[in-house]
Image 1 (cartoon, one colour):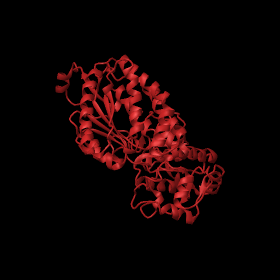
Image 2 (cartoon, one colour):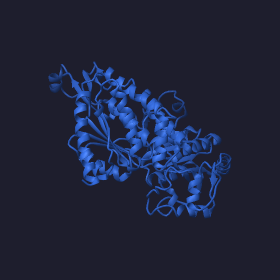
Image 3 (cartoon, one colour):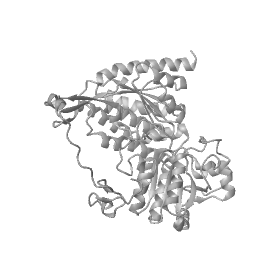
Image 4 (cartoon, one colour):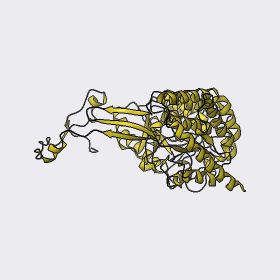
Length: 494
């Protein structure tokens, strides 16, 4: 057999075995499921360094210390978030309405794993799948077969220690495009959980199976004039240095409010960022492929190495390369997603102009993903929240760690939906709940016969014109949490 045929056969065998194992898992109690999840999380956490070193060695991307933190987050933090989540049997009862909700597993999950976050995403998907009583078959990126396979092996050994079916967790050893497509369309597959390039995500949605995919993240950060400048720059430096920008929620552009622009640039330099000259910007732009594509040679590389590739020199401890851009789109090659510690720089006068520039950047390959705002002005924060087409709007936080729930209280997740605007079915951070079908038991209403024959009640009197009973984010009292604003509309957007 050639490699494609062997990989296709392996895909079929793994999904068939997963189906058999999942039927056994579907009969586990909540306590039994939770025990499996706890064992896997502990095993994955203990293996964090080993898996991080293997991932860096195999892929050539990122930083070992950052990958250790990612692995710890994907096990310890994810476990803490999901450990008390009800996923078996009756998960909710509303006695007043007579409705019970019962969780049922979707079945066999195909988890497509990217090279940017290989071991952390693999362990995250395994944990949420087993928590939902689903089996999972991983399709690893070809450059991460060893480290992703090892991640699956760590989890398999954990559940094998108490006699659970090890076929609940498996990973392709022959990673080909043909095998991935076979996994996605196989009759034993029930749902596809796709993290990767936009082409692969589109293939998942076209597979004929239910699919949960994620979109690209061309994420902007706006530093508004009321911001704590030192804190804002520190957030950007920490975010960009986190595995050298390989999380899809990492900032790709920074927009500075013009009155504080020079102070921000000085602080960037204080925190060892390099402000590129016009010549250096041209050298970086020459590395960008046509259109909005990402250069894989730059992904997850240090600023020092990227500068070397481009043909100029920066100190070895440089934190970010900052390149001024005059616009957004194909003509401005650094305005796209780069997944590397390169920030395109814009200077705009006022939050309205910054808001507009943020929208342009999101529209150019980041719709629905993540936006970061550094501000202490609640009115500006409210306007951004209402107007920007991003489903994670982070305030005074590093974007990489904030979006996944590491530096914020968002659901802990390594898979971030972008909603319909980003071509995804959900805008949520993905959790075990997304791998559950919910069965509803509804008791009949006692008086529904009489309700049908009863005359229609007269219409309630309408409220006075120009009166609002919605919380108005533009009123200081409402912003400060003093209740609901009731009064004439001053907001043209409502």
